[in-house]
Amino acid sequence: MDLTTATWMVRNLDQPVSMVHLTPENDVFAGGWDGQLTHWDAEGNHRWTTPTNDRISAIALNDTSVAVASGLHIVVLSRSSGDVLWSAALEGSADEVMWWQGDLVAVSSVYDIEHNDFIESAVWRFSSTGQLHWVERMDERPWTLIAADDRLLAGLGRPRCGHLDVSSSPPFEHTKPPTSSPTTCGTSGRTQSLFGQTDGTVVNHRGEVLSTEEGAVEHLTCMVKGYVATTDSGLATGRTEDGQACWSSKGAAVSAQTEAMEHDGASLLWLARDDGVASVVNVWATNKGGKIASGDFAKVRAMHGTSERMVLGCEDGSVMVWDREMFHRRLNTSGPTQDTDERTSTLQAKLRALRNS
Picture 1: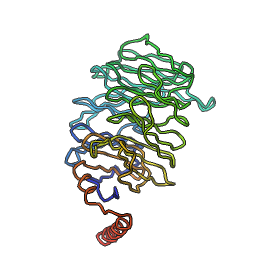
Picture 2: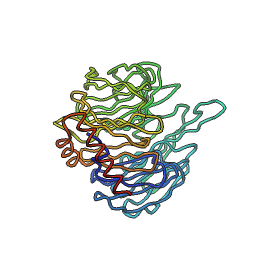
Picture 3: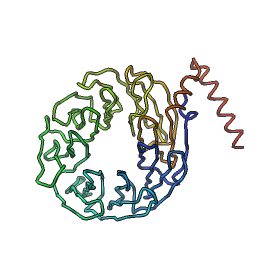
Picture 4: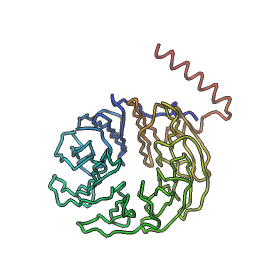
């Protein structure tokens, strides 16, 4: 099935998209490279647009507020109106934000061009109204924040590597890594949360090694059953919860991946591969590794999925949403053969061209 014919909503941010987020209520938040944050409701109606300081690199929501990492700042806005409630300048770039126990936890890092490395990082904790509770500075960069077993964990780079428990005030408990390689990514799952490392090791939040991939782990996605690990060489491997390989797919570098919706009781993995100045998005049924849909898009920069919908953001400003019911209807009515699919796609392209002429 051609994904471009099955979109439920297409909008434009008017600047390259850097981050997208879907809420459980199916609202869409999209942030841009120039700092714009836009909110569309579950029906696709534009609610508000607010400019922030700089490129939005993270989005976190609670019941009333949306927090973003925006350049050197964190900015907290009203979910209902988009009004800025408060902001705070961090030391270096703001990399990550997460609501935790009613507070906002943020990560910052300072990059030194001469050393070609991060020279200092910090974890910050603010109240919901912007009061700074504490800040802990460290030599390592916390590359990712994940929630696991009622704890908030930060995956570390060199020199310590491993992860820190940043659930409460410092000093933090440090869990040493099974190997000496730094953490590169992480994800929170239903039964376990995962960290990926530069040497290909995937460990759970208890420090247990689940698998060793063929290259540095760049993306991790927890599925209904198991997980998918993708390396810097473009190798995506689907595995069971205990790390047994089920399927793999090799191709161009992966720019984004996420779990979204289900089909025949299986998780669907949405995976975007770079294709020059564009991206190819493939959808996989992860119980068998079978590809069930694909589409060509402008370069994909961000993805996020829920059980009901999937959203992606592109470098040309496009924000596209798929809805589970419509997606399944299109799957059930798609052509049975490749030749039929190609003829249908050609006809649809001609019809779209006529409409736009």
